[in-house]
Length: 341
Ligand code: AVJ
Image (cartoon, rainbow, N blue to C red):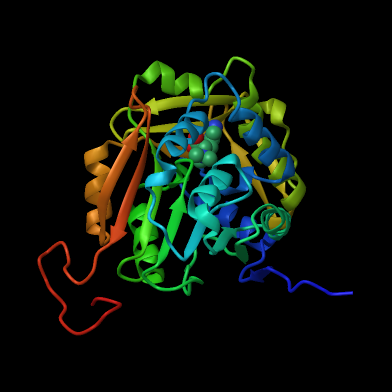
């Protein structure tokens, strides 16, 4: 009997722990409005709800991005490694893998995710379906340092799809791009999916659908807090709210207390007091303008090479490349090949 060498590994750099949720809630309770980071939506139920949202008629981003990717996947650079931030084994991942392995090209696939189980599942299925792909999964949070990224420096494509970048407000977004810059080398590519500014009514409907799935998704974070932090939270005490902030170009999802509440949070040893009508901020989802994106990327050291959109300009895919020596301010580093000052 011969045993094939394993074509996948999963490297655990972080473990999700209730301690991190406790710290996030503690910090969130001290801010106004009270804020809970959106990453805590995604337990098993929340992930399933999000998947259902992507099929809703009102939620255009996923299907639009997929169509753009389908139309332009063959124009992507032929790289040695594909790194996917927040990856799973989506249809979009398949499209990328198909395009990058055409003609039986070998490819290293580096899915990066906060959870180990989906990574193992994806790694098994991808190695089974794509004979020329080797998988090196990384369990990590892109809120934290990304370095070192597997793959050959200068020959990698980092994909960050689905407008997940929209969950970051401008400061944290610049910090994320700086982390990406530290983790990449000159010549590496960045493929970014970003939702675009559009008619307010359509945006609000995408985050407040008629079937109520987004409301359920939003309230799911209350179940996560109740379970993980032993909090007496009842989802029925809250209303789902989705508003568009035209000043900051972003959707905000909030949970509004229907009455005054005193919520024991035993894991934190405190009682969370909410006034009637008080709103808890659970997600911001930024909507972008192409010129602004181009500028943010350039400031972070990534030059836009291509921008693809659908005909309605609802969603964008941007292909950028990490600059070689020259910086936006004109400074040219002559000797170092990596890591500008
Ligand atoms: C996964 C963050 C891109 O902001 O559109 C969907 C999450 N929230 N419906 C988004 C989400 C409500 C989604 N992202």
